[in-house]
Length: 320
Length: 137
Image (cartoon, rainbow over all chains, first blue to last red; front, side, top):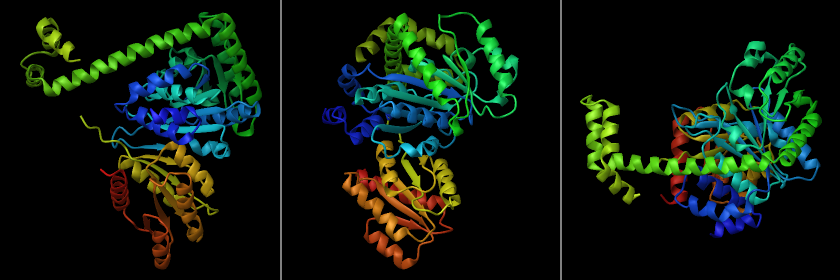
């Protein structure tokens, strides 16, 4: 594919177009990914997540400066939510990253969630692959502003940074499951505000009380991203974590898991697409749909009928 | 199943004026028209705008300028897009733009210009028509 070749040669425009194709789930995507895949696996992926307004974009901006100073190239995926009403979106994370617009070593792409509810669009992982193949050393994925359960980032990133603010809550909030559990590094940003020291203490206590899932002890850092305070320490901890993942063998293990879940997701999605297609185009399926809609049969029994009809299933699988 | 794809728009303020109410109103309005709108903030150079537009692979750039420098800044963006091989990106503009300038800017490749009071729906429809025209649909 011409576009992939040009992208691999380092041209930005083909990369941008390929990202669009992946985002729009164009029919060429399997072929694109097949050609891209051998060039992936070199980049290190950092996820930045946390509630809206915590300072994620500003932190990403400062981290990017830090990595650029070290001579590393950076790809950024910045995600904002899609409107459930109009399907439109306002993508505004870029505003905080203006100093990097003209740096050819930085590629920034804004993405809308497009109906996904895990904090990332479902195509984000494939876009990470594209940036990886493009040759970016570091890829930073910034999720939408999340609540407690948007945890997709943990599967996409090597190091997940959870960014909180002093107003994030008390000890009980830090004990809750979900967001608090996925951090490899915790950051209390806007640490000049009241309550920051207290939250740092609470988080440290929580980290030490929590179950030990690995030998990595989650550091808790205080930053003021807007004033460049604490960024060096955060860079250091990211580096520590990277070294830890590498030497412990966890990195390879996690990437294995990531490849597996990616594979299952793709199969699941393809089957789902075809199933939806059948619902629209196969008379027997649409007959069941009608009976369920009118309430003549409950949806569980109707599904059972379909799954027990081996003849029908074989025919459908054949069509797949 | 044909999915209707969201049009991607970059809203940018070239030049030095800090009046971004119009840009923000339009950003929200186009979001509500189902578009993905990237807002890049104040005081952008044509270079920055074009670079962002290319990375974001947008269909449209909306330029807002209230400083009177539109005759210089808008064509600069159009020319840079051409130079970078991205002339498929539609450029529209808004601001306080005298009628004689409108003609000049259109002759230099700005697709359409909107002044105060232009209804969002009209702007959105114009964008849709221009994008459909360019992609040949």
